[in-house]
Image (cartoon, rainbow, N blue to C red; front, top):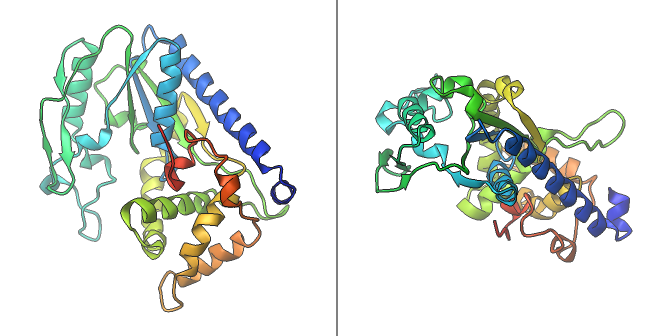
Length: 305
């Protein structure tokens, strides 16, 4: 990979990797289309920063090419009211557990939609911690399909009363295949943490220290709520790009260098900087070659989906 960057061949590798992603999206859309007589709901799940949002949008485009009409519902709108949210062992709200979702409302509305009825989709206000119904009506017609993404989307317990034959499940994760040498693989978890660090700092003003300090909690939630159910997927999408670490280094290295030795995140920042030291970063001109529909644009900005 470093040789490709240093020899000026990285743009060709970017194009090939993006074409592979497009081919995979098309193959999954073909699977959905082949079951169009029964499947009306597509669930997309995956760990943090696996690119679930981009995957749902790119998959929707491929379904439209086949003549289907995707409609998107955000599972985040089906949280229970804040005071009903379960608490973890530390007495803090556990927003990642299945009990934090209004499963009764979700199951009832999905079955109504599958029966051809019109339903009013809620909007969850995270600041106030409650749902509002504001006239956002939805109904499924013959060629319509629902696309929904969320961490519990592979767990059958999320929709126990919905006919499983009408559901197609996609598991998305950034499974990097790169190794530093024959004994040391590059951690998929590190790859995702760098994605999240860059995105959250850019879009939410979250410090790199905060991302690092919260990561173990995020990982515990994934081990509890996502990984045990990945075998339930009808299709698996690897959202990692072979060229992405040189991109992530360009954006993440300055953020990590800002972490002071006095920070509790300093040791982890040093470890990440050491591993990024093996990678040759891309230049802004090379990064500009990444298409605006790329899954990486969800994290580094410039996406047009």
